[in-house]
Structure formats: C-alpha cells, structure tokens
Length: 288
Image (cartoon, rainbow, N blue to C red; front, side, top):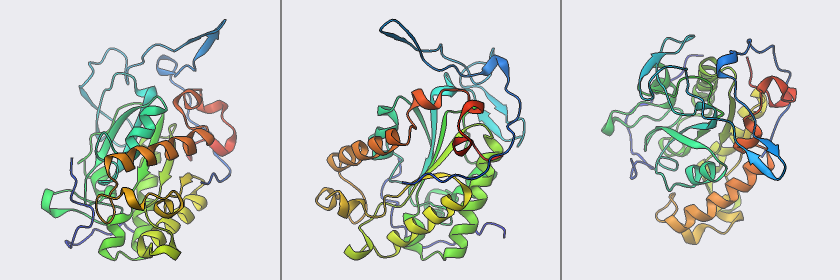
C-alpha cells in the first residue's frame, strides 16, 4: 500500500514550530567502510578515552552536501556522525528544550532534528508547507546527516490523532517511513517514541490509541519502541501541561529525565551504540 498524503485540516500540535524491545531475525549487514568505522570509548586505568570525532565522509567540509550512495538524496556532512542522533518528529520534539532532545543530549548525542509542528505520519501542515514524514523524507524536504548516525529516533502521532487519520493510513505511512530510513541508514540503530498522552482510562482517547498502534507496528518490525501513551497520567505530568498536549519547560525537563532513564535501560546511550553494529546481538541489529 502506498503512503497516503494528508489533507489540510485543523492542526492540534502546530502551535510550536521552531518499552519494549522485540527480537526478530536479522540479515547480513553490508561490509564496513574501514575509514569511517566508529570506535567505542576505551578505558586506560581509571580514565575513559573517547574516540576521535569522525566526519561523515573524510576530507569533506562540514556543512557541505553530498548524495546518499543508495537513495541519491542530498545529505549534509556533520562533524561527528557516529555521535549523532537523527530525531524525526513534530512540535513535541522540535525545540532544543523539548523532552526528546533533552533526553538524547543527556545520553551524549548531538541531536539533528527533522520535522515540523503540525505534521506526522499522515498529517501535513500546509500553513508552513511542511509535508508528512514520509513525503518529507522521499521528497527531499529534509536534508539528513550523511554517513552512519549512531541513532535514528522517530517520534509522533499526535497530529494524526487530531486529524482523524485511520489506522490503515497511519500504519502504511509509518511502515513506509521505516523502510525508507532503513534504506537511508542500513547500519544505524532505529527506534520509535510513541504519542504523549493520558492513559486510555484517563481520557487519552485517540492519542493513546495511536501510541498503541505504533507500538504494535514497532513490535512487528523488530524496532525498539518507547510507549508514552500514558505518561501524563502515570508520571503525574498533567499539571505540567502548557496546553492540551504540550508540556511546560518544567514538564519537559521532568519527561526528559524519564525518557533518559528508559533509553539508558534499553542501552541506547551513545557509549553503547558507538560499538560496531556487526557485534550487536541479533535483536539489536538494524533490519536490512
């Protein structure tokens, strides 16, 4: 089923512009490129020695653009791609002080955000000419980091819930996005963060449903998923809402601590992800 494009409508989350791991059989990874292989931190006595910064492609200027060797899409050379987390999302994740970005930086990542408020797997935001995630990836709206980023994180679903997107459309577009990201970054870790919401028993409604739907897709694809569909209730964050769906700065700090703890438990900190993906347990390898 081809991804569906969203039609214009009310944007629930456009006010800001700026867990479970599942084991599935992996496939053989492509050969490593020796000149860009990431190195894990090493210990000398009591001192941790970090690996040197690695450019996306040696001898290319940071900020220059080059084509992805598989997709042909334009990408940007970054300073240290193997410490970079590519974060795809909506207004929940777009700001530097958002809870996903705070958590990822606390775990040692340089965060590169792609996305926009009011967008999602199906939802587009025509007021700022922002397509949905899949169309933004394949249409060249996003200029992603070149090379092998340590982690690729996809967050969202709230705007799809607000627009009344069907389960089928959300699943089709989300699955197509994951396939596109796996093609773009066949060696990078990919994970998903669900839809921030109250619990289903506390009025979470469609947002909680979309969170569960995305969790089922992640399970089927063997992708790590952090459910946040009950966080406002379970972690008592309802008093930290700035509006119906967004957290205040203090609420974002609280949620970031929770997310950081979840990701650390899943061993998704930069120090764990820096190791050669070929040595990961099969459950942790990216899908080919």
